[in-house]
Image (cartoon, rainbow, N blue to C red; front, top):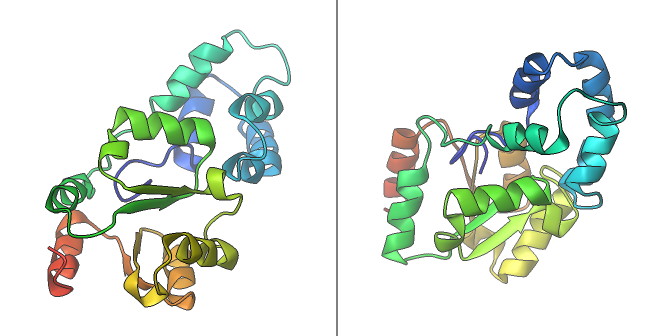
Length: 193
């Protein structure tokens, strides 16, 4: 979702903005983030555990709720994103639409609710539910297994080259997202739009 439909939920740019806003030690937060982020993304720790390890390991002049609210506010529609295309595809009911993303459970569920994604996607294949992350090869095979379709019948769209390459290696058709109009053209060429 991040980079295609929405801004990234809690990537380096979003963290940097909040670290500066709250006058936190960036090197310390980044080091602590690196130590536990994959666990949060894979759903093996909660957001509270992640925040205990990265932000609230010492007293802060702000509350956890204030920080979480600010963190979640980083989620916005992606400029030149594909939300309109997703809505058009969902309305056509021509194909099975699913999300395939890396995200911690709490931010994932917040974003699905805030942007009405449950009404657009038929399936949510998020790292926090699958216990794996893109571009790990095993997550692509798990998605193929869950969808119960041949890999070549799955079209995977992502903004990151390494994720697209891993999808191709798993046998999926892929598109690297570079903007809404380019995606619209590629989907028309595939007779999807």
